Length: 144
Image (cartoon, rainbow, N blue to C red; front, side):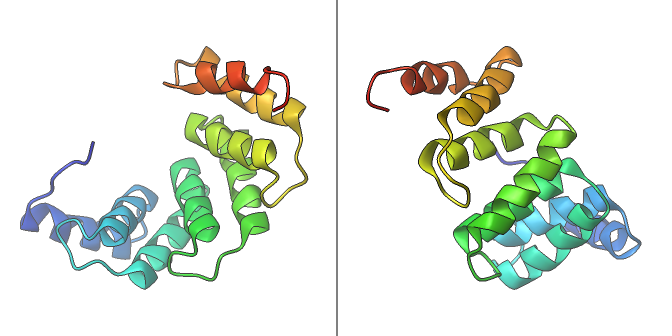
């Protein structure tokens, strides 16, 4: 679900982002990444998201990890994605645990580690993240 912003709200986000608001930088980065209310521009998305992540905003660290994992606005770098997911997970950002769990489960950017993947999905499941319990159950199946 995406929030729709008016032109005035987008301009206000730009002002806040330029003044250093990590929340506004992250939101603006998301808008540029999706092309929502602005022309899609992954380079601009990366710029704003990185500024927010550098300020320690866990959501932005997770989003930047996604950008590194998918090569959006930056060359793909799975190991850097894992590092960013770990940073966001330290702040207990649940989506980062899910992303980190997938990386461990599939051996992307890290050696495969079913136990660490399970820990990540368990954390997310305990916090009500939809689908985390199903993924956790799948990890317990023979042959995974």
